[in-house]
Length: 226
Length: 298
Image (tube, rainbow over all chains, first blue to last red; front, side, top):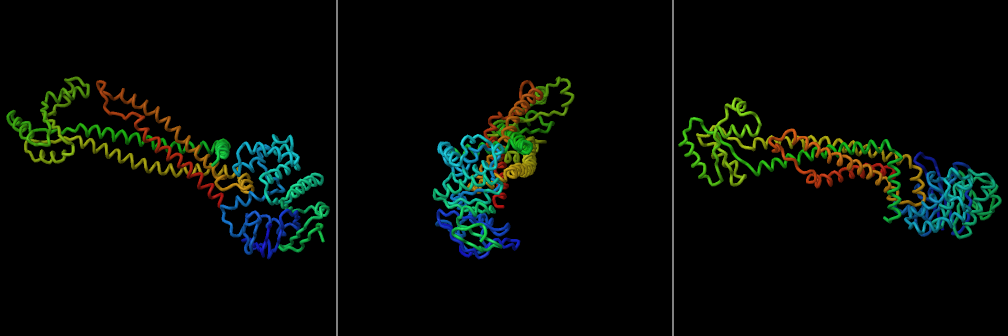
């Protein structure tokens, strides 16, 4: 479970990222976070990853209070949160296999376990036969699948996707959303930040709309606009 | 640290060196110059100490007597001196004997030598039971009216010790400056790697890498630079020292007798190698740690 209790984030330059946010996301939910550019969506993601600290309020993920967490504990928090970015953020000098395997190397898994697990994950996201390709040899959709494979490799309880379809064509975007939905079905909480109205409208999942740092709409089943 | 991670760190560390070849080369070169300076200074100081010790173990005081003294007076003098319990023996070196020794030492023809050393005098060589008593014996001898001059190897030794101290002080100053330059250069090399890999570091952090997981490849890179910057000058110095010793002994020895005793290189390296490795690897670690720490804080 994710709880934000009266969370405010004001940046050093005075810009308000989020203001008095109260939010609760249950385990296994699929949530779309929508809003205009600069509304505070990315601030929310960065707060959940403990990349930035809230100015006030408390954030709890599972049984961990992020506001009381010290620097040494952050990596262990992030191992429980998979992240997918719009710009992929893959290692260009590593193959698909190596990119995905890296998430297991970071948590010091034995090479044998890595060799056994990675092909299964690649297969689950539809990247069979692409293990030896470098990112520059992949299409946008394949790159995003690689990122998703890396994000879910260590079985995180939460998957954060920041504009995962932002750089993809409509068909590929749908493929990626289907993959995310499949991951959600296995019990992972999925939070998707997006501008893609068609997908949000069609999926009819929980939608949280943020504008000017405030939650202006939170519906269990909804579309991009009211 | 697990074996999988260790292999990963070594691989990434090597990759860092080869990605920034020119900067890595500059860092290795600076470290190498620093270690070379250390090695030269160390070898010089060790050899001076070695020769001072050799002189000390065979210490003789030479006293020159008034030339007007008769043979009886000389014998009487010898008897007085031998009564001193701190003196083991006293040998009379006549003027002719002194000339023979000079000819043997210099290799000059006897006629030429006798012209050059017309001022050679008869002397007594006094051997002490214990070198520590040297000063007290000199104090006693200098009270005796028959003695016009006292020579002691201390003068030559003092010169050597002064030279050693000068080399030590100069070397410490130069090495200190080079260490700072080396650390800065290694730091710059690492900083370049950090800059090239800034996105990779960001990704690592997002997927839950600890600071140490991020840090190790850069420390390994610094260690590689420090290691090669140490080993290369040590190898060069090894061969250069042996070459120099051979050339010097051939050029300066007299009648196959060495003028200076050089220490065997392996004896010096037993002390020098650990010191050089600590300094070189230390420069690598410090340089990389400073930079990566700064980056991770930011």
